[in-house]
Length: 110
Image 1: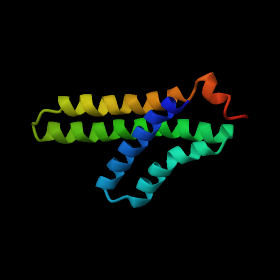
Image 2: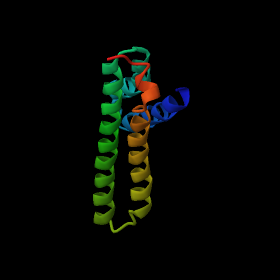
Image 3: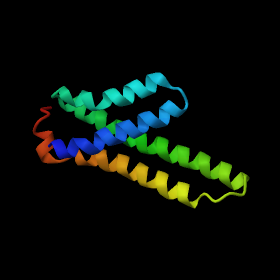
């Protein structure tokens, strides 16, 4: 169970760092508080966390799109950025998917 939560914590910290770059302190605090939502042993808290990991992935893809647009406009290479942010987006989805196992769901009654 604990090993399934570690990727979620990493995803939340990386997302908080992304928001920190734009001085969005409320979003930083919300991202850092996200893993603590799993302390509430209800199915809705698990679903909220999983939904937010999907939102994280979408935000990373949006950031990726912006970076690609800027780099193309500046005639700079964008391939490395695409790979990095693509992996981060997939990792965010993966962290939510890990919480979908029966072992985890058993700890969160509906």
